[in-house]
Each structure stands twice: as C-alpha cells, then as structure tokens.
Amino acid sequence: MFWIFCYFLLTLDGYLQKLSWCKYFVKATLVNPTMSLSYQYRKYLVKNLVIYFSHIAQEGNEPGDELTVTYRELLQRVCQFANVLKSQGVKKGDRVSIYMPMVVELVVAMLACVRIGAVHSIVFAGFSAESLCERIMDSQCSLLITAGGFQAKNIVPWNPEVDLCWHTLVRGASDECEPEWCDSEDPLFILYTSGSTGKPKGVLHTVSGYMLYTATTFKLVFDHQPDDVYWCTADIGWITGHSYITYGPLANGATSVLFEGLPTYPDVSRMWEIVDKYHVTSFYTAPTAIRLLMKYGREPVQKYKRESLKILGTVGEPINPEAWHWYYTVVGEKRCPIVDTFWQTETVLQEVQHLSSFLQTLPFFGVVPAILNESGEELEGPSEGYLVFKQPWPGVMRTVYGNQQRFETTYFKKFPGYYVTGDGCRRDEDGYYWITGRIDDMLNVSGHLLSTAEVESALMEHKSVSEAAVVGRPHPVKGESLYCFVTLTDGVTYNRTLEAELKKQVREKIGAIATPDYIQNAPGLPKTRSGKIMRRVLRKIACDERDLGDISTLADSSVVEHEMCHYVSVYVIVSTLE
Image (tube, rainbow, N blue to C red; front, side, top):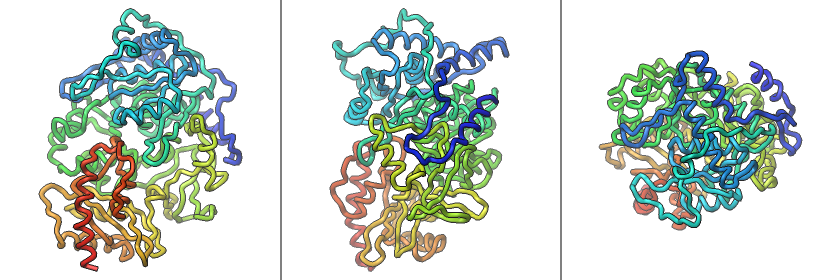
C-alpha cells in the first residue's frame, strides 16, 4: 500500500508543459529490481514452508518439452550469469543486446543485466540479421547474447574469436552476486519499435517508474491472487512480454507459463491443452491470435475443459466485436470477464476494460486522457479525434535513446503540452473511451472520417469472412476510396454474389458512405512476425505500386506475391462494373 500511495502522489505531478518531461523518486537510491526474486522466494519459504510455491513453467514447441523453474532456482541462475557478464567486463550502464527465442535463458539474461546495472536491449528473435545489426549499432551494445541454432536444426557457425559458450561460462560461476544499487532514474532497458516505417526508435524506460507501474498494473488489472497461474502468449521481444511476462509477474511472485511454440502446432487446440495442463487462471493474448483460432471453430476449444480460467485478456490492437464475442462465449463460456487493454511500447498500460461488455475502456488511475480535434482543441462530452494524454505517469518512456530531439518531435510537436499517442479515439455519452485505431488508419471519404477498424468489423460479421484489412486508395471525386482485403473461412469460394453481400453488409452496418469500392480475396494478409497486419504494404498493392519497400519484417513474404498477382484481375473486374 505504501508504493500505491506513492504512486497516487506522483501521478498528480502537473501537466506536460515542459519538454524536460518527468522524473520519479528523484535522487532516491533504490534496491535492484531483481531483489524481488529474493523477496518472493523468502516470503513463500516462510509462509508455506516450501520453496516451490511460485515458479515459471516453460512449455516448448513440442508437447512434452517442458521445464519448471522455481524462484529460488531462477535467482541462482540469474546470479550465475550476472557473474559471467561481469567476468566479460560488462558494468553498470553498459548496453547488452539479447536476441533469443522464448526460453528461460532469455529471462535469466535480461535479469542478469539488471542485477549488475547493465541496460538490456532485447531484439525480437524473428527480426533479420540486418535489423539486429541496426539496433546493436544504435544502442552501442558491447555484447550480444543469442542462441546457437534454430528450431529447424540449422546451427549458427561458430567463430572462436568472438563467440563464447553460455554453458561453459556458467559452469563453475558462483550463484551469489550482490545486486547493484540503482538511482530511481537509471535506465532499465531499451526496446526498439518495429521500424516498419523509418528508422526504429529506441524507447528508454527507467528503473523506478517502470517497475512500480508494471507491478501495480499487473496486480490490479488482472486481480492477481497468490494461487493464480498466469499465461501471456506474447513474445518477450515486445513490450507486452517485457512488462507482463517478466517484470510484472515476477514482482508479484506470480506462477506463470512461458510458451516457446505456436498456437496451431501440433494442432489448433494446443493453447487450450496448455491451459488445462497448468490450470491457467489468467490468459492474456492478442486479437490476431483469437481471430486465427476462431477460424477453426468451437470444436478444438471444447476438446478441453478450461475450468481453471477466471480472466481473459487482449492486447496489441483493437478487438473486433465478432472476435470478442467468440472469445467471451466459446473460450470463456460467458463466465470470464475480458480485460481489454490499450497501451504502447512507450507508455506501458494506460487504459483498461474489465467488464463483460465490448471495448468500453476507462483510463487506469493516474492517466489523464483527452481528445483533440485537428486544431488541437480539447473536445468535451461525446466526441471523436486524436487521443492524447495531459500528464505523465510512472510507466511512460523517458526518451528515445540517443535522440532527444526525435523524442520531442514525435510525441509533442503536433500538439504542444500533450503526449500524442498517434491513435484515434471516440468517447461515448457514458464517458467510455473507444480506441478506433491508428490515425493513419482513418480514411477521409467524401469529407467523412471512417475508421478502418469499423469497416473491418462489419466485413467480419459476415459468416464467410475470417479476417479483413481495409486501406485507402486515391479517388478522383471522393478523395479516398475503400479497398478491402478479405480472407475467407475454409471451404468458401469467392464470387460476385459474395462480393455483393459483403458490400451490402458494410452499407447496412455503417452507411452508404462506407460501401467498399474494391474487395479483393486474400488467402492471407501480410503480417509482421509479431502478428500485426502491415497496412503499408497493402496500401501500395491497392495503389498498384510495385515497389513495396522493405518487407523483411514480414512473417511470410509469399502472401504479398499472391496479393500482387490477384490485384490486376480485381482491378479489371471493378473497372468493368464501374
């Protein structure tokens, strides 16, 4: 309660009138964040007379490939590897790059950095070597921690001049390492945004604010209790994994699941098998994953009981009503509330919905949102516009690493005095906030502002559509027209009748102004390895641009080739109809 009281005090810190930004617990010297491992271990040792009360269960890609690590064992492994880092000359303030799959060693590596005051920079393991190199160079990392091979058994060539073996170095290393004391505003980690447009930004988070905020939000948003088992399906290479796989759960002594595999391997019921196996009570995943599994129907879900589930969560993107309803009724059987969260790499969790209703969102305490129009004027009551924030909170980023000017320009220049999220938002008559998606995903059709997410949801209400993406295409009269990509459910054939039904569906759900001008059958949508649809690529395809730019972050580039091949025939059909 002491820390929550401090949190309340510190979030009443005034408005964003100065670009010097914010600081918390100024001049305070803090216990190292990894001390939470020691605290939780000792707490449960006394309380339960056993040390195995809280643990991390690692579930590999193959069923049966599993590992359980207790808090005591984790602390020992962290201290061992911290001593290894020190033996290699890593010291407080040094940057260390980590490029690893979802294994316990990844958690050990990041906490070992924190133990000695080094700053970790984790790069999602699905990124290319070029992307990794760019991030290493920008953050000036002195050491890279990575895996020696891949799931496909291809081994990385060994270079004895620069390569060292983890297991060799750890063997014989002491499992005791005194933690480095930290200043409240010492850097904790650097995490780069995806870089799908322009140079990646190195988002810098600091020790006190970030740790306080992730610990508090995890506890209160998920209503975490000592007997709960928590599972977040994200990758630690993204901010969700940093905050709600590693730091938030560990700070609360949570028993959690770390999953290395795919949700559809070896079959599409894998996730529900894991839920039953570990008696998961809190399940946190992305709408993309929900839509993927929804495509296969109820049967794979209902093969397992899922009786342990108490709370379901979504993160990463707005969830459409159809996916929400399926998640609530099929997965949760109408008994589990859905925690729908909105936040960014830069901010940690800001807004949360914790009700059995769709997408009604209120700000977490200490967060003061506002909605602005294009002129930067605050809108009152029911309104729609730019989502901004009026004052800082502990979990917000401190700067873009090595580029303060970019930080100020990106987040404060458009509307001085406000933090600009880049997202659109609608506030209803009851004061709830509805996230409408990125502002650049808003389309201006004949002077009417349309949300791509809204059109996509309307398309997906049709029983034949499993996924949809909408982008704008220049129109000589309307300014922009709607170009829709749809992925159909198994066994459905695309034809003129279905196209007419889809247009009618959107027209009836939103209005004639939102009627799609073009609909293209897309067996798959171009997505990054984190599961986000790459709309930049779809816009280029819709505009018949052959140069798609950098598509190295796509999980499957063949999807783009298929879309390009189908574009010409679609355009000819539509032109004939017009």
